[in-house]
Length: 147
Image (cartoon, helix red, strand yellow):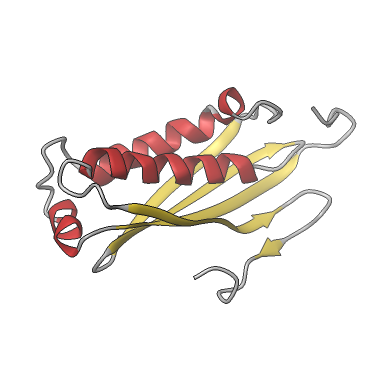
């Protein structure tokens, strides 16, 4: 692991996004809460939050952080669900991995809860969209980098 002990804690924020591509009838079932396993987006939100808090357990060289807040939000499109995870912390290292892990886990949860009706789903475009804080400053992805 990288030694971060000499660094001063600062406010860190990261936003990650991805999409779960699916049949239009699957998005309708999610929106109408008709999936047999329950409320897909509520369960996926909790899974994403848990994932952000446990990132260092899954990513071997990732520092354990005291996560201050996690927001996992969804937008249902005609043939996809967009996932966005935002993680904030005051610490010595960034929260990019926590945001990416939360986003990916929320997407995997959507897949798990909907696979009985749509095994052809695809999780795509997982990317860091924004990062603030720390020595390297602010990073913002532009729309033309990832669709």
